[in-house]
Length: 223
Image (cartoon, rainbow, N blue to C red; front, side, top):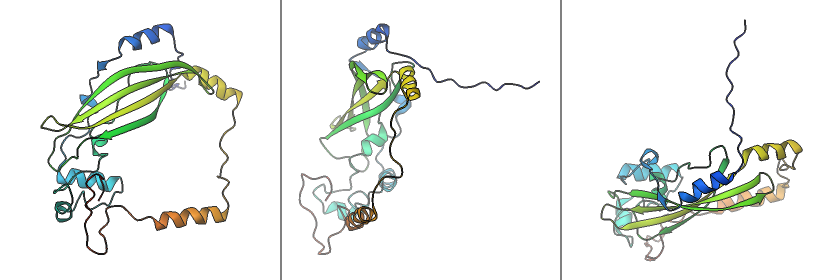
């Protein structure tokens, strides 16, 4: 007798009044995030690995001599290092699909080698429900992350949004058929060549100037 393997079933929920009331009551909550923290110490190796992982070759992050001559006076981490410490978590709206919508990151001070980054996350509430062309209705969550160093100084604030959609209605709309992207992308050879030329002409900011001069624009992160 054949044994039928259990099949995973994706929950298919729609937005209800009960869901809306439950999530509205959570607005302003400070969320538990310890299980989602990936790093906190901006060690020399951690900063170098992070910069290498995102392909940022700016010597400000890894070259001590270069960094000492910069406006910061010492090596610092890429600004996005804080997101490597903590970016976000899944929260609420059981059974709905969701995807990250946008982020706005505001910096107040750099992260130096040896700094300890502490993060906190507040659920600020949601917008909607709103009609959607692909999923019936959606709600957009708003979160705020705050990053501080070991001296209690605020490093950065990250405001980010997540769009949650009714998975059941999305499936129904897909079954009805929607126009998908045209593949391969309809670019001619001249357009492709132009794109490649622009990519190859890019010069990484922070690369050593041929004249040996160092940047003195303290208001910029990459020098």
